[in-house]
Length: 463
Ligand code: 4AD
Ligand code: MG
Image 1: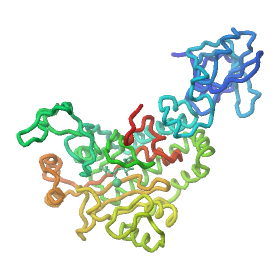
Image 2: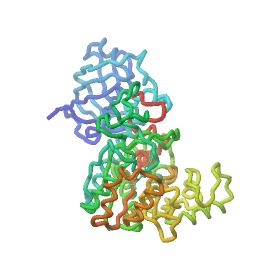
Image 3: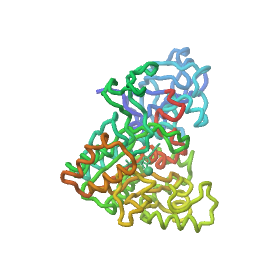
Image 4: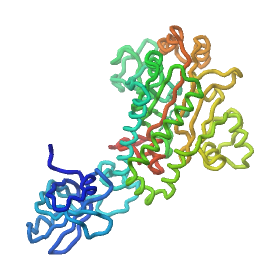
């Protein structure tokens, strides 16, 4: 075992007089030619530990060379701290410099850089308090997601990242190919001949694991996926990424109401988990970015989500007297401004909207009796808008095939999906939670680029 201890644990102990070893990065150094106070952080917790070095005991040149950003190993004795806001500090005995950080060029020399600037140094931004807090919460959410489904008896199913089908039928996919773009093999009619490509066919990065997830649910009853998904849509908004992570539970024998119950319970569990386990980081984010964050998170856990149909939502929006950028009428897809009006102004609670017009939803959703709407459900959150999209699935072979033909989706790509409706079909439902939208909501950050370590957005994949 390593002798090194995490700052998170040390700050909790009251073991005054014990000899300890810490390793981490310098956040600040101050003092004079007799004594140096070095605040160190190792990423285990938002707080730093203070190292006090009596310069007489060290090589003064070495102490002088240490500046913000340097990485150190320190051994010393835990002592009660006189400084405010910290319980213990380390009276240094040994300081080893692992790596210096030239103060004239280290970009994180000062505090208070803009989030935009920090995006341009994505390789170093994890060393800031903000990104430390965000990435710790991101981790805790991922952990809580697996915990939740494991406790609920769901199986984690790994669906492919390279696929031959378009799960959402929106055609916004990234091609996967090893053909030479300058000189691809051509068919007689001049089109690219993908039969010569790596997989002997056209392939893309997946937009969703749902279709394969359904195959798992129709055997294991309840599964979930949690993996990266890719969308080549040119949406330059604070809520869209070209590469994002999605959690997609899929349940045999669940109808739309069971589906909504699960989504609500799941979201509440996640928020509660973070309130119980990440309060230090939440308090920091609440103070620095969003004074209502903790209150908002608590209200998610306590408030019952509102459940209404799309048609009723349109009536509310029409009667609102609001001048929306995108005008509303029955049949339009809801924009974030509409979703947020419903959640933030009209109901002041999360809203689950159901029964959307079939025209604006994917082919696999269960058709309602009215033949105009489908059994879709979107969960809308304050500050975010849509955080979950899901539905009951069409389990009837003829109806599903009819819809696929109507939309002109190539049947050769989906024969295997249709077969599940031929052999032992069952009512089933599922949904997809956008992981980064959840992290965005829980951290109170305002741009999705700031809740994923390396954001991919149009014209940006630098790191
Ligand atoms: O509503 P979507 O497109 O639904 C599906 O993909 C279904 N196959 C899910 C299912 O039923 N299993 O996407 C689901 C969620 C959205 O509600 C949103 O939170 C997130 O994924 N999402 C995005 N997040 C970040 N960037 C994007 N470009 C996103 N597109 C969707
Ligand atoms: Mg959606």
